[in-house]
Length: 500
Image 1 (cartoon, rainbow, N blue to C red):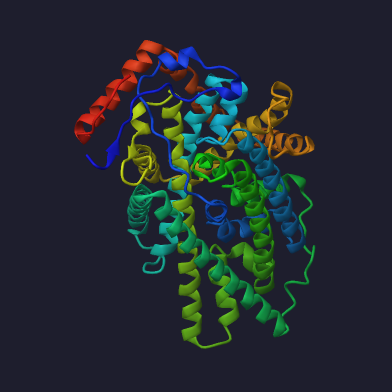
Image 2: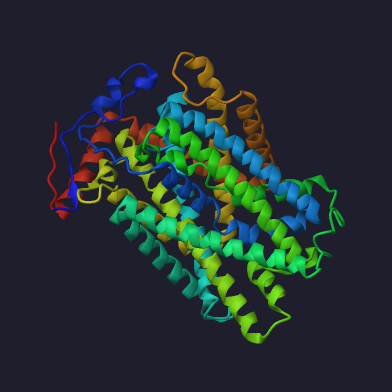
């Protein structure tokens, strides 16, 4: 009983930003969802974003990008452009987060701008997308971790990889259930460890240059692929590596002084990550030739082996195990970060009366959204088992940029819809315009490249419309559906419930 709490009911989510309280929302839900405690400082918030962004992408994407552009010079330009575009998106979310520092991030921004229907569609897809992202990152972690002990060609490697990924999800959910501070503390440890490993890689590159090996770094634009269509694919790959900058806004309600710290954390984290990515790519191109980068799947491991190849077999083995372990640590940190932030989405839906109120149950001891975490973990667990992870990644990217584009446009719309609202953080209009055009380019490009699969993804997104009008917008059905599920869970948890 001490693990769960319910409080006396109030109407979910006030609509002060909309200038009125919705009687419809008030009558559709009678159970109070308790607020989350503000425990995250600016350092903690930046750590969540950096830990989320710098995961598997920097260890996988460089060889895909070099395959598309063909040269070191163009690949560095792609990484820089990807960072600038992601910074534009982060700045847009910074303004929106300062206006609306609530749990749920982009869900709240879309609701404020376009209404309940659009926000429910966003919430519907965000839960699916983030569950798949958790599954993809957990599988990346299990692949590198398991490769320390087993050859990937082993007949049981795929099965054991998925089992280990499922166990990693269970472990991370348990850590986040224990408390937000516990999750962030572990995240901080993994973030520091990750940067130490990347710093070691950069040190090897500097030492390699000091030994006179400049043949790779001086190649410049030699071998550049001038096919512009290949550049778009490379840019999408770099943006996947930068993915995660939006997760600060999801935990905005738990950030101390969110009006200032949320936009600051977004800008600081994106500048830090962009500079880190450029430096790491320079290190890769110092240690490896473009040909080596193209044929290598484990770039960091290969780079370490290249430096220690002239030394003893023991140092070569050390490099292989050290960098393989570093990649596993990096992806585990990203897994922890995305689980911590994404679990707030079902909670936000419960607060707003769009999800069953059982997702609003908060741990009485640790003040964490325990049922929301369990739901996200269960969805991610189910996503682990499909074999085609590539489709999961494409689904995440396609749907993410649709709703991010709506958020970028929301910055412009709210300038005219709410001209008098206080904006502690305000950006030039050229920033959301550029970000919105980028979203349109990526969406149209995906549809053009694969119209069938993109159409199926779009249908999956549109399924939220009948669900909304059939259940969420149906007051009696919605309340009966939500309360019944909540009462069942409360019964098994032997937790007390109080109604209005």
